[in-house]
Image (tube, rainbow over all chains, first blue to last red; front, side, top):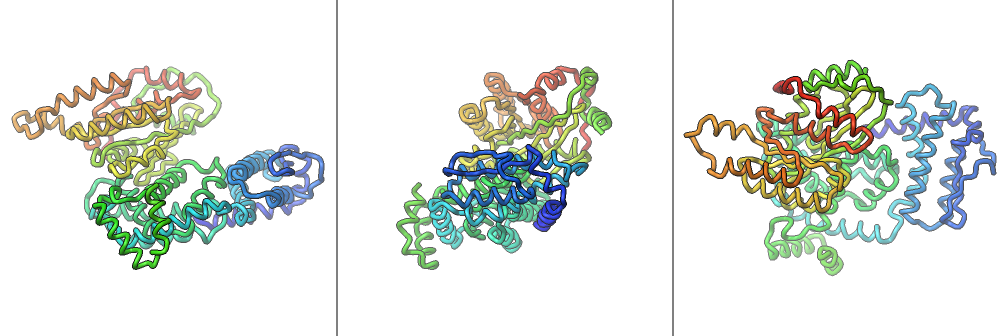
Length: 308
Length: 231
């Protein structure tokens, strides 16, 4: 899963759109969707009101329609998902993709998703104040915990402890904000998980341990996430869940996304008990970390969050 | 491809599929997943690895990770895709489990037969799934490390295991019956019943349109015990 695959998909998609037959797209009912968001809520499909030059104008129209209303993640997500699903159906029916393999159709769908979401990301990513607040709190909590957490606190067996190699996994996770498309962000997470999996396998082979499963994987993922403190983790995860095409958010990708979501959930609820520390020891560590990181001013906000 | 694939699978499973081969199906795909729960050290991942390695590695589209497995089976013209999601068994991660079992079609709860505490944990999982899981979820209880039992039976005088050991197995059977669970003693080490626990649940665990056909398959007698190539 290279990010470049998808750039190719986007390139191919845009190339096809330049083909003269793409202009026929508006005559194909299935393909000619335009979402007008008059009033912000109502969604209308207008098949023949305007003659669109090409399919890409159709996508552009969808993107423009987004700029007319305030962000509402639930509705925005539903609109994008419906648009992507309808467009993919339209690809299948259109002569432009006639005789294409499943892979090429898949690639066209990926290209469309990347095109639309790259344009929309500035509007829909971390667009709600609540999400931004959670990002800030989570990041501050992680920056404290990363000062004192040890692999033992998370039940990582000595055989599997290898903090130097975990740096690689951390780097993959930290790349998540370099990309704007949901798939590219997801790939960063999957790459991080793959690095961890490989390290666990190698460690189990070297020490004749049982093959590693979730008992070994999840603790390391949590540890790596804490050490990496990836930017805007909460918003990035929400963004992937909302805007990654649902039909492609399955299988292995869904499993590893569930893992990082559960890592996020575990981290945001971390307390003395969940790290097998004494209450006093945990508090002392947090206090020391606050002094170290200079986050003492946010003491109140943080303790409220950890109480939740 | 479907035909040769079937023959291969038939050979591997030792199940007679002939009865319904004459029926025709349009190609469709059932996607579902099962979740694997159990205490640390109960042998969840070994059990899956034994299953995947023993049966499927040479087949199409198999993804093998440390904690995630997926497999596509061609059955006549239909494709059944299933996934196995492993979950962390440590107590501190217990509260995260619903994120994994939400939506799962089936659950295999694994415990270690030589460890009474892991059986108690397994019972807690059953209660939790019955209270909070998908109501159509099919559950199976796998008493793993059955090779230890064999060892005990053979060398009765070298009794290093607790006296309650056999009683615990009977207790598990009674418990499984009471709660309507599939129950099997498995051994990832010797591969005993490993295929069966996955297939029983695969075949019966389906609640879609494919149900009738696969249930029919389940009722067919096994021609021979499923072969268990080691590795």
